[in-house]
Image (cartoon, rainbow, N blue to C red; front, side, top):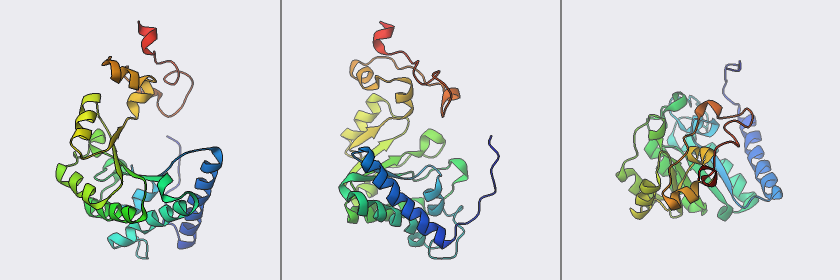
Length: 226
């Protein structure tokens, strides 16, 4: 592990600077030629730390009430929309996420509030990182239906899906698309494997997050296995 300092609460001037950084990042992404931008408000990173009741101990306009805890997320989204337009912006959320010591007593309420706010803004999609891949509870169909009712855009889900379970989720009407992460790491031809019903390479977590070519460019494609 890399040594790190004890975190501290941001002051409000620093928060304003972070919002400006999101706008700057959006501009840079567009200049680089990206078609879409995704605001990462999930998986225990900074924005979700503001959302969660256990990590947000603030007493100012960014803490306390549900609306206050969600404020920085909406300010970041508004800054990105001002640069790129809502139709080119999505957001990643992870309700019921429990890794990295995240605990939120109002997780469904605050995510439904955000979904409604994103719907008002015309945000292109919400990308839900489902919690059960990381030891959290499975999202209920009741909550999925509430998300559908709160948000008028496209819903993307991800986490522990197979080709068959992804198709079933889309057919249920509770998602418009299913995203894949770890399977793509080990299967650069994942779509073709799904199309053929072929077996998948298993990803090696020991090679995630960095290093050399091992676990990066050496997973065999289908034609190499033939």
